[in-house]
Length: 85
Image (cartoon, rainbow, N blue to C red; front, side):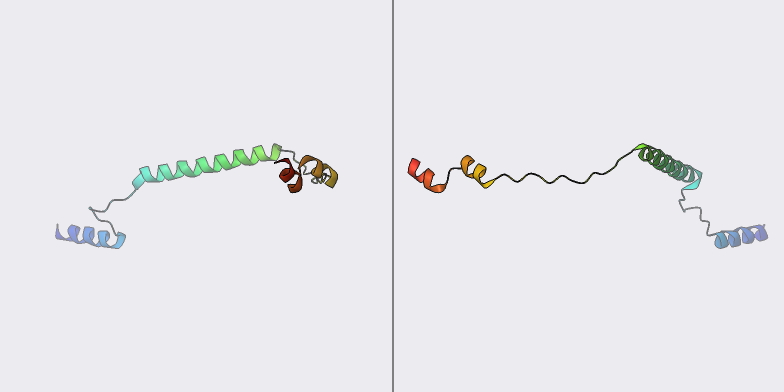
């Protein structure tokens, strides 16, 4: 019986097994695997969707600058505002 205890003690020390140690176990592995597979599936679906997009960027059209005459007609000058008061 003492040799069995010695073997158990040696195996516990070599494998770092401890009865009081908490490990993730098989449930932790399954959850991690499911998360990994889900992430892979989402990335694959996103990649498939982005390949369907047909986008050609067109050069930006320059905005027409308003003329000075048009601006002065729209905004009364400071002299005109002072005269109106």
